[in-house]
Image (tube, rainbow, N blue to C red):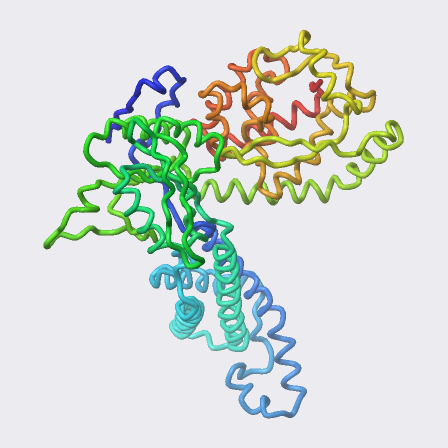
Length: 530
């Protein structure tokens, strides 16, 4: 499939994203906040592995306890284990039981739709899938033993393995479902939406979103007018808590600025009549990597007699064309976030003695300075957050910036100078080995940042960004990036820095992240920072 890119005048002079590989192939999607199928598959295999190990260790113990106790259990125990000794095989001989249980369980769960998003599955369905998979697997193991005429295997071990597998599969899936449902209901995964269209279409669209979703799923933050004179009226969107006002944010030409300065997840545009404005909307959403839903007005207000629209599995239930950025809600993005959490949490624990030593050194050498410097920056899709670094500059460093502007090493809105006189003696050493950046691991753990991604922007820098610079905010910012491993402070043009960020965005992959992290570790070890 060949995709023809459109270059409308407002964005025609901006650097274009790199040519897309696999153009026209949609990225796999799942419900907001849900674990992708590969994660559920790995979790199932881990559950079965732990159940196998627990059953293998405890089966002999359970048998001895029951045989030494004259209770009602002693009467039926021989049914599970007819012989007293010799049936517990070495671990290497019992591994095939685990392999059969894992293979059959995965097939059974897959066949009943168990790898669909857990929030879309009922509790009954989850329990039945968790019950059926181990039972069918146990039946398969029994048939294999019968076919091989090998009655000496411990039935108690197989029984315990099956029971524990049922308990673990059901328990962890129900717990994950409960957690996701609770988070969704709290609005944690609410998607901020902007509506675009005629006054008639906007009224229908606002009511449609309210009727089919809740504020915890889709939050309409405003609408844009397509008329030359932007409408100033405010839409009233009915909700369970009463009418919600949907303000007019301007006209359609202001979309690019809104996508930078407002956290927007999706744009819904109703196409009807003269739709020249739609070309710019498509290109703007494409450039800033924002999901765009296009709804033909003829399908909204037209009357169909026999035809019907086949809706996707989407709560909005719109007759739409969906244009979604590559990797959005994909398994790779999920894995990237898992890596961020695991690595940042591990480093914070492992390096905690070093963090304490640095904090003590700062207090001993510069007792008047705070240990941590609050870093107020702008991140993903214009979200502002506060990160932290170890203090490396004198107390009045921010006020002295204007006095040093003539020494700025960087051409553009960013301020960087060599041999900065504001840096303390200890701060020079911390910066040389990037040790002052370590507290930002907390921002990675919270989700404000990632290990790899474009550096966040200071608000005063963002005001001086050109429009094409702002595209770097279309992904989560990171501790390190291509700029860091291709020269870092030696690069003197901010435009070159941003081009590297856009190159990273257009060519992102997990493998690229790993290469950048490896090269960053080498650069930090060399101590090339300043």
